[in-house]
Every structure is written in structure tokens, then in C-alpha cells.
Image (cartoon, rainbow, N blue to C red):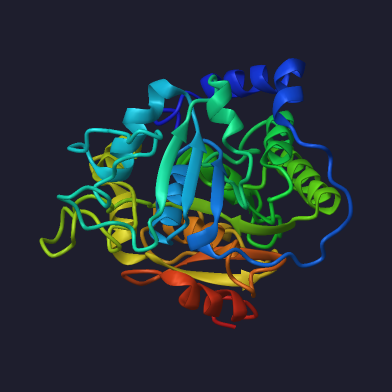
Length: 370
């Protein structure tokens, strides 16, 4: 995913902000205390959410939240990346434009597009080096942490800073982490990551430790600040496109609710061979299982031969399922605690609060046919 985002730019910008005592004193509200055992879930049409992280998954999460009808969806990244990321969401033909308040004029909100978001939602890229932009995270009702790499989405100092900056309105936080259940992992999976697909999740010890540390700190901050934290766990991330045009069919709209993925530019950005397995994966495996707890399994001894499989596999998670679980974890009553999201064969996954509520409520199913 390094082709999508220069990681060091965002980290450096946000770390500079987080170390500025003068800026903190102007932005951060007074510390909150107490524990809120079950904060009310968010009503998308009334809620402002912030997406934090690096890679294709945060962009897809931002777009999914927009289609879910959230009133405002914000994402922090360097200004030089804004136009490129907008094209990844809406296609190479999209020319990024903003209204007077800095919100994107998207194909869905323009007169020539699909039509306005039914709840009047708006998208906005924030420049991490602009103090006014960063100050606008105050008043967020929800926050989502996610990323493509098997590491914390941002350094903890940045995450803590943003959690505090949201202020007392923050009610729900969703965090995408990895599966720590050791079943199906081991030497063969580690070998597959080195030889067949560098994006395979193999439970590297240092990566596991860093993710657990970040996860624990977010949960601790929730106890301190009075907001709920839902953890969604993923394995090897695959797919995530088909959000502009479908190269294999003529009847899939280029914009609108059916275009739930990133644009075709995503496939080019992640392509490593003549056969683009991410595209084929989206053709066959766009649904997902949602299983309560940390119950994901690795690919076991078959991992090497299935490293780039486009079928439903034990250790894989589709990006569209991962993004949807994060977005709707903020709104669904059943989405409390932790869940494992695993790929499932199907042309499309759940859409809307009702379908996702059922997914979370049925989380006792292990998704492994047992």
C-alpha cells in the first residue's frame, strides 16, 4: 500500500501537531472522567465521524460512511494527497472540487451525478498541517481507526490527541485490529507471507504486541472518557474496488449506492501481476461473516497455495466487509464488544443498518460451517 500513501508524511505532520503545547491548549477540552457502560449508538443522519489511518481501507471506510448517511465524514491526510485519494474513491474522471465550507462536491452531490446523499451527508479531507482543519474534529460523535498495514493505524500520541480533541460529544469508537487466535497459523503461514503474498497476516510477534498495546490504550481511553469501543478483527485484507465502473459488466452504475468500493484505480495501484486477484476476489467474495469474539483462523498448511485465492478462505477478510463492519459498528445496537470479520462468497455484502444489525446479532455463528 506504499503506492497509495507516503506513510511518513502523515505521521510527521500529526506528530508535529501533537507535540505543540500551544496548539493543544487552544484545541483540547477539559479532561472527562467516569465510565459510560453503554453509550447510545449513533444515528447516522445526525452524526459526525472521523476516520483515522493509512491506506485503502480508511478511504473505503470514508466512502462507506458517506453511503451510510452519516451527516459529516472527515479524514485527515496531507493536502498533496487529497486529489489522488478523491480519484481513488470516485474514479479517474473525477475532478476534485469543494464547496465554500471545504466539503467535497462528489458525483453523488452534483447535479449530474446519482443524486444527493439521502441524509444530506458530506465528506471532507482535513489537512493535518492546518490548525483550523484539525480543530474541526471537535464535536465528532464517532471515530474509526483502521489501516491496511498490520500495525497501529497511527502512533498512540496522535490517536490520543485526536480522541481528546473530539471533546465530550464522542460516544462511539470502532477499531479495526487483527485476529490473535492462533488456530491455523504457524510456520507455513509465515512462509507464505515471505514467498507468495507480503500482505498475508501471519501473527508476527512484534506486530501482535504493537496492535495489542494500541488496542488496550484505546479501550482504556474509552473507560476514562466515557465512550464505547468496538473492535473488529480482520485477517489478510483483499479486494475493495468496483466503486467507479465494473470492467466485467455494463449494468453496474458508476456512482451511487451500488458503487460501494473504491474506483478501478485501486486495482491498478495494488496490481502485482497480469492476473489481478483483488478484482477477481471482488467478483466472487464480496459478502462477509461477522463472528463474535476473536475467533478467526489462519489458512494453515494450505496458505501458500491459497495466498492469492479469490475464493472464500479461512484467513481472509474483504476490505468492503471490514469497512462496513467499522461504519455500522457505530450505529448497531448489537455491535458491542469485539467481532471477527471473515470473507464470504457472494456478489454483495450487507447494506444499511438493518442488514448489519442482523450480521452483528447473528455473531454466534463461527462462519466455518460448524
